[in-house]
Amino acid sequence: MIRHLACLALFLAGPVSAAVSVTDDAGHTVTLQAPAHRIVSLAPNITDTLYAAGAGNFVVGTSRFSEHPQAAQRIPVVGDATMLDLERIVALRPDVIMVWKSGTPAAQVEKLARLGIPIYYAETTRLADIPAATRRLGQLAGTTPVAEANAHAFAQALDGLRRTFAGKKRVRVFFQVWDRPLMTVGRAQMISDALDLCGGQNIFDDLSQAAPTVGREAVLARRPDVIMTAGGDGDSLGAWTQAESLPAVRHGNVMVIDAPTLALPSPSILPSVRTLCLKLDEARQRTP
Image (cartoon, one colour):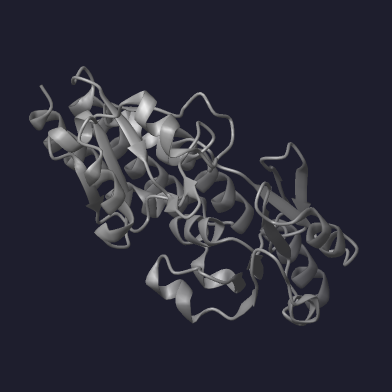
């Protein structure tokens, strides 16, 4: 009788953990027998999104440079953009491995696939996609309430920035990623999307690469109103101050902005986008 009642109680309670099924950014359906509570994240942006989704405590391994949020810095590192410690990843017994679709080398992903561990591909290229990405990871980890709340807050804040800077006079921007060789952002980079939201026009948004190499003459020919970079120091922009024919130089719009997460396509990008918008607005005031 006691055994019968115990079985009946289990039946009425239902399964302890229900299976979850989520479609990733590569269009693959990832199905797990239970929410993922042991996750290896192989990109800083994925790690950041997992924390926003309420799944930070479930991340058991991550990649180099996973610095946001600060708690992510305490997680064991199992690789970087070029090399993964497969033996260590297996030892962590992950329920799922999350890879960056365009950032994790295909050869490394193939090795991971042979381990027989489910793989989730993540790829977020637009600011407006971040809330949905957060919700999907929350669904996969069984933390939907937290993911939904944070996704909603991000979307509201983003919409507020969009409304604030909509209709502002657009300024032409050269965003310098690196100076040797000279690199910028193309339309596939989220920074270009952020510039557009802030009322800026990326002068190289006609290039499809995320971080194309360009020539100095090409920048001069496109005559930016603003030349900027994020992080580092002003030395990397020093060469531009000699090009007095450029509107950016004439109007004092050559600048380094304090936006350390601007290149991170995940929720922590928001404060840096706000800084970008404010700095562009200052430059706008100086531009006739």
